[in-house]
Image 1 (cartoon, rainbow, N blue to C red):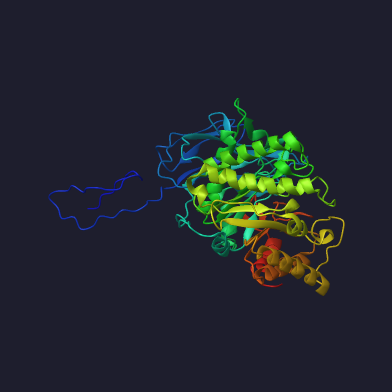
Image 2 (cartoon, helix red, strand yellow):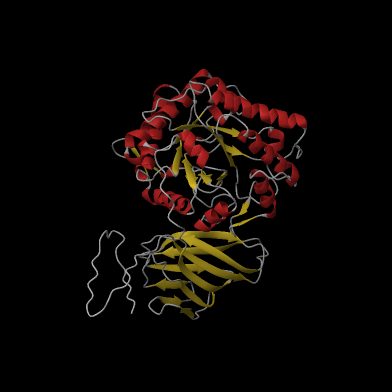
Length: 510
């Protein structure tokens, strides 16, 4: 006979007490919980019957929603709720359809989404291990299945004690989760405020990993989620920080290196941006103090995370005019924020002492970085990377109304010269850091071949330098004209255009 027992994950010893038998094997293993599958046909506005594969899990399909309750996610590593909905028509007025989960009257995932084609569509939600009940709130469709399952991956190997250069050599190709946690509107942040109308889930990161990427950069904006305390210190709203942590955990569980930054809080033209390098005197001191408070809160949240998690101080800090020459004080302010970032994270302690940190020059621009960047002091040796971005030439990469052509010998020479310049700068004894090209890309102008050439040659020239250079392509989730998407975030799959571009990124010319 074989007996099985559930034990605590904290257990470090056991005693097997059996009599009147011979014990031949004791096996300790991690059992994946069985899926809970609820099936039927439910449409908002009518009561119906949904049947659960687990008789202990209760469900009620009422007129307004499907209520699932009386379950436990104890033992789950990456609990996920999957909803399959069938859409029989496309709204003529282009209205958005509800596709959300609620628990205890609070939304835990989803959004109002566009419906652009009929047929079945699957939605996935990463949920908390503490979840015991939820409501499926969908309209404009028939829900045919609700599945609760553990979307676990093998536990990633711990990474520690690596220098920045060693870690850069492990990070492979990187991808940006743009226009998600960095989205803002009127001074507020929200994961679905921009073109991506569905929160990211582990399925997205699994697809990124399967496509050949080893690192994801997760831009994050904080803005209205920053809390000023009575004593003048700053922290981050706990619910929002928990969501950031959930996204980071999903990416790490997909065996990706993860980079988290402060993004649009210093964004050019973003309403209520506060990370302002044009300020001087006591006004800039206040900016520094708030910046340090935010990073202290982030670093405390992730103090126990190993080197799979990397922090990047900020995004493209500039004076509001991309074409103007920065002042001496503006360059100095960028350098002082780098210093404050490194100091703050190290002072939090824990595994932040060993963490690799990414710093950058004015506007993450190669020329401005070479001319004005000063490497900050660091109490941890060889744990800093230098970030720059690359969207040159602007008329091809970003200007929606200009050329879609790239790839002449002159184009390639300019790109190579830029890679040589930043590599030579990084190898200076006063710098001595690997390079992180935190963003690069070219907008879709129905010019996939030219874009593929651009992605291929940028990675080729980056790989050809003496300095270690990690590249991270920009993806804003927009699969349409002038978008940057490699992946369709509603289906968590590679787009046809994305397949060509990813092939080029991985070193295969078109």
